[in-house]
Image (cartoon, rainbow, N blue to C red; front, side, top):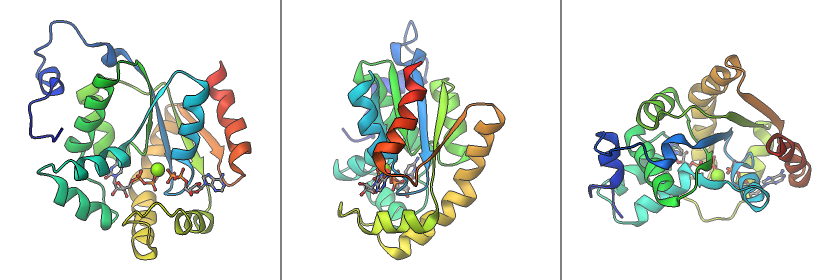
Amino acid sequence: MALIMETPVDALIKGEHESPPRWKKSTVVFVLGGPGSGKGTQCANLVKHFSYTHFSAGDLLRAEIKSGSQFGAMIQSMIVDGRIVPSEITVKLLCKAMEESGNDKFLIDGFPRNEENRIVFENVANIEPAFVLFFDCPEEELERRIMSRNQGREDDNIETIKKRFKVFVESTLPIISYYESKGKLRKINAAKPSEEVFEAVKVLFAS
Ligand SMILES: Nc1ncnc2c1ncn2[C@@H]1O[C@H](COP(=O)(O)OP(=O)(O)O)[C@@H](O)[C@H]1O
Ligand SMILES: Nc1ccn([C@@H]2O[C@H](COP(=O)(O)OP(=O)(O)O)[C@@H](O)[C@H]2O)c(=O)n1
Ligand SMILES: [Mg+2]
């Protein structure tokens, strides 16, 4: 459903619900890392073993483009340019997805990507992450992985990849430092083979 429609989330944002909905008391784990670091791959592994629901901010934005949303063209041009979409849009998509899922444990992948993302989510959802996973991987390896990802994504080309790396360093690394200073960061060596990365990730969810 395109975002132009009034959704239950709008009512929630306006405080029109009598009691806080279930998702507002959710356990949230943010999953961060450079483009191609394995966020989506490891979240797909995690949901097979733990009762979390996975949402990728990028996937939600791509679905919004496909839905024929009034914001579709704008979102698409920002993605092709490697830029971060206005937070109001992304946060609304995430909250709507959480609301509709019926679950209360979420892996949110590729978000928050900048300070605006983080603050708008905090203000709207009023949720602090339980912890933040950070998939650490050198840029040369990220580039190799993206160039062989073959998902037909318009932003998986060398020109956009360079822009996405720059945005990651300038806008997302400060968020990672912010969570580190709060003692919430769990850093994983994501340059290893996928199975080894998952062994390291799994431990964090087992307790
Ligand atoms: N540990 C790994 N080693 C090698 N390739 C990987 C690893 N993890 C993921 N990949 C591959 O790299 C590409 C990017 O992974 P993906 O999960 O889409 O990353 P992200 O969501 O962080 O961009 C995919 O083609 C995936 O199969
Ligand atoms: N929080 C987010 C997440 C993604 N995006 C956009 O979506 C693109 C793809 O994000 P993604 O998370 O699917 O990309 P990967 O890191 O998985 O390669 C980003 O480069 C941004 O243009 C955004 O604007 N805001
Ligand atoms: Mg991804």
